[in-house]
Image (cartoon, rainbow, N blue to C red; front, top):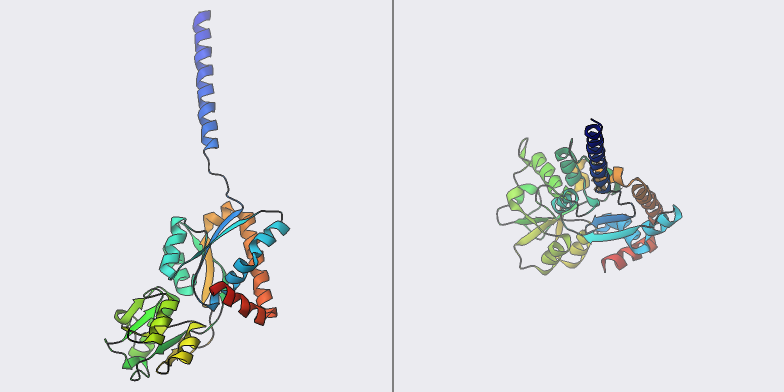
Length: 284
């Protein structure tokens, strides 16, 4: 009986050891917080100047050192809100920069799952619908011969603004009436197409500074509307956002980013000429 009890004790002890080993293995394989790394996507246009200031001046890295955290920042340039949204959801980037339209889209579609939420607005600037077709003075003048460039059809803030304008022009439920005329194209490419001429792209819902460049360099180009007219006044244009999980897993890195972004915004307001030089340097 003693040997039987001894064997039972040994078996029980081996079982406990095995359980502890499995538990230790599970703990060791548990993902740890990736504090100290932040991957950010920006797009084209002066609306992203706060991010460009952070990139050129290494503001996040400097603020991290002030707060006792070494941070590596990886920057990515993308075009189109849907591309940015896909990158956030796939985990390719941590913080995305895109228009309010893409933010509202990803917030709605991830509610209860990834829970993507806005961090901050980056600024309010008007978007112009520019056309080089002399016959287009208002939306009702557009025909199937016109092709309108936007960063992402429908989803981008430019696409959404065009939809709002279409519903105002053509009536309730007609928001998508002009979608068939839109083409997804990055702002620099659309600008080059309008200035050069000869392309099927003859209109562009643009952003500063590209819209001003087209109006200056293309004699046939003219403004059809401003987003301020469509929306009834200034409105936040672009924002930065992230998943709830990334913020929860990286509270220190998140806090550094927010603090650095606030400082960049304040610096821009106090140093407008220098900020313009940063934009030129950042966008080459």
